[in-house]
Image (cartoon, rainbow, N blue to C red; front, side, top):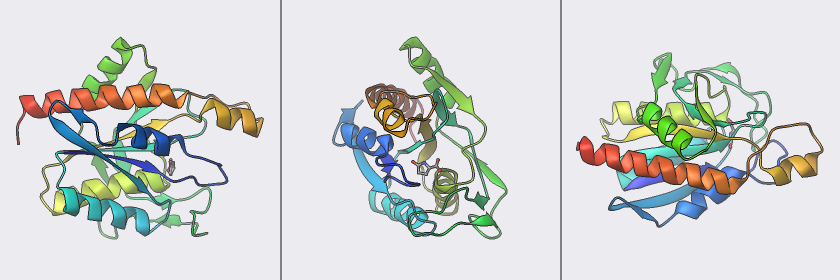
Length: 208
Ligand code: PCA
């Protein structure tokens, strides 16, 4: 199966488009592979634990984490997770990490293992604005990508792992009155569908 995760709202945002996008693909079957969605907490301990539990429970062939990145104008395919927690805003438990490692003694960084350039090409062909990003930040999204790649590495899991960051939704920008880029979550759903198709094709071309 392929696991898709979104996040709950955080940082004063009333919603998180990644949540509705993950729910939208829950239960689909792509290239013969069932897709399951889960929503992760924005919590310095629970997010990583939840990701680890999901990996052990489902033993997925691939994991696509999805999250919100306010201020970004395009979909960001995250190439790297760094071993740093340095939060600009507190998490949903009120905890604000400052320069801590995600995993004490862990590698400085992990690279995502999904076929990101192929996904990027497919998104461009579909008219969906996206780019390869070299930083997922130092908040829960980076931390979750790090935690999943770390778990896969230490547990010798076969899962390919990656992260897709999405802009704010138009509704969120309209409500905030801020001058920020936005993207309709329906485009995010299409982007995840494209990514899932590419992932399933990649998996059947490179069986584990
Ligand atoms: N975005 C945050 C955490 C949860 C989410 O959706 C981030 O970019 O780290």
